[in-house]
Image 1: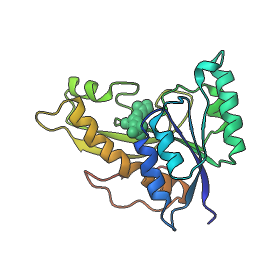
Image 2: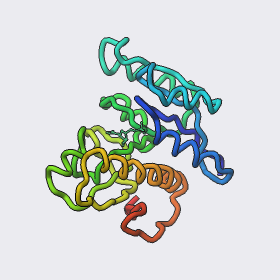
Image 3: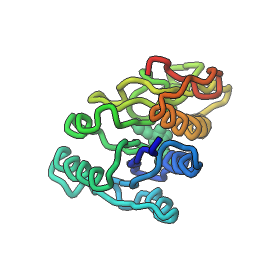
Image 4: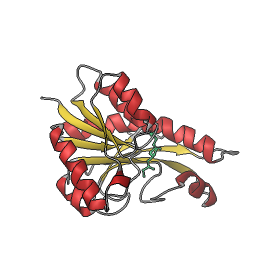
Length: 207
Ligand code: GAR
């Protein structure tokens, strides 16, 4: 199949972006990176992407009078890059129905919790406060709700005695790096589910 052209949207360090790019480097991966865009000019991930020879761009949200005007420009950049799909990878802007509707069924997000638990921010602290025993991360399609939308895949990790938000964030992030490329691949190809296990990605057979 012709590889899908994926735009990756970041706001910060971009480790999930790197995980996606590393997966895309394999000859048989069904997607390539069309562009990396950020709403922040100082996002560290932009340098990483540029050092890999990728097209990058900044659409600074503070330069627009409202969210929709910002998204109109973002959408134009995505079209300009000839993107088929969008992967949000630590993109920390809430999207309006304008952009979400333009990319309905073609936009994925990764979130550091087992959704629908703990949407929003500070997920690791909130998971510890709630004393959940199992935490993790989710890749989902983006819909109008914040951190909502059909789940493509999840990876679960146990919460261990002595965990704090930082230790938890480290282990969840490691799980994110395995989960996102696996979910993107499966989203693009519709491949069969691998057998689920506790520490590896667990897939939603409904997609
Ligand atoms: C990741 O943990 C990602 O799940 C989270 O931001 C981090 C970005 O790290 N995203 C969200 O919280 C979105 N709601 P990265 O820049 O190293 O990929």
